[in-house]
Image (cartoon, rainbow, N blue to C red; front, side):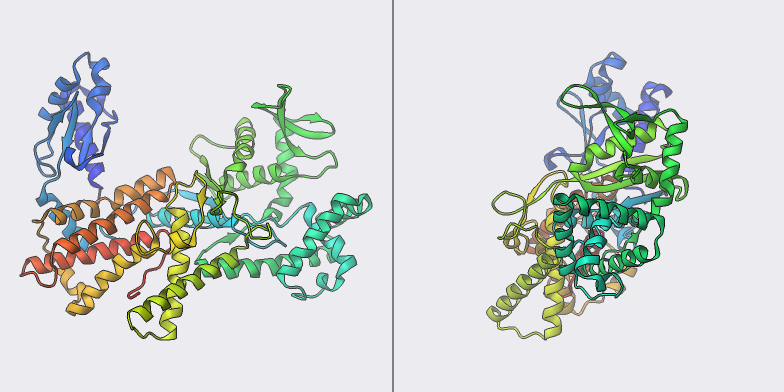
Length: 585
């Protein structure tokens, strides 16, 4: 089903042509949801933008548009406000018909896109031999949420985990382990991940301080890249151990990913260099092969280069990212490439894409997007750290969220004199704790930093996951109390919208499709969070003001169906954020 917004835009497009000629076909009618309910439900602002072109006053243009506008099936008679705004209010009859269609459909009457794309989303991307930390949280859950939304819309999404599994750090680590703990290079899992991380830090310290160690490490990298059997075997052991640790977190967060690390593109790197050289884009600078960039300068005002081959003959992140880009476009046939990384990498991607465009490796029908995000801050307003100043390990943060959710639940059960099984408590604590962490992050505009606070994210009131989960649980409670079979009620759904709160809730329920379209374009999951939070608020007001089980028929069934479709909308919306629901809390 087309969204109401899409229907209105189509109607206004026809009205513009009928009123002012075919020249205005395809003009953006500038129809948007009304900013204030007192102005109606939607607003058309196109009259002001056409005043100069049509050499007429906006109100006169608005009048002509309305005279040629056929929206009697959707709206009450339009009203002109101010200099030429056209205000639109949906008919209750239209709302009822749409809601009945939504209720009867498994997908809430949201049709898959007519123009599916092959989309690659590059997200999470931890480094081998390091533990996932709080810095990986945002990339992982933002990328997962965007993938879920685009998959639901019918796009063919490839979720890629571009792990750091290649390069100088492996030369350092393998060289250090040959001296300090050689058994780790021939036997699986003799070290736990914490010890491996400690050895990595020690190897980095040696590398920075000891020139002899540096040279050995570089030779080890050459051996690894050259396919030396012992080096490759050691590398594979280290990678496998890290992968298993990553998977524990991905399973906990319900994240699905296809790993394709930096090593995957290793054989393609010489081809990148050769391609740039053939196009005459390479310049040598201090022994390195570079492409000089436009718009990037140093303190002296000189153009900055993107280094694609170092003076020692090695390659770097930029070369790998160029190879990955080519592979994703040519082999994966992707038409949209989405990179979910922190905002600090914005310049890097701008530089890589500039080089790719110079080389004509990004066709006009391919979109490349950097989905950037800000920092996770502690309550002191500084980058979130442990008391000892270390980066917070992601596994510890998630475990803490679950433990706090469990403590809150057990305290509430005691206050309510309720007894629940250990299985119920464990499941509820896990869902609430992890949902709280995810939602607290996703509900922020991803471009901003945000303060991480367990107390705020686990609160039962406000824009939090527990508040939304309670709205869903409330509907399940109504079903249990009234012994309601919602599936039976849906078969012959009849909606009656009489009370103001019913109308407000009904109008909001119709907007999910519009919101998902916005998220898919702007790639901002917080838009979906805002919608779901407002839905929960509107439902709670409806529930407080409109008796459900105690109402007479046919109003009782209508209100039960409004409860049901609210719960289904919440469940679907939360699932697109990677959040599960509970039947009881």
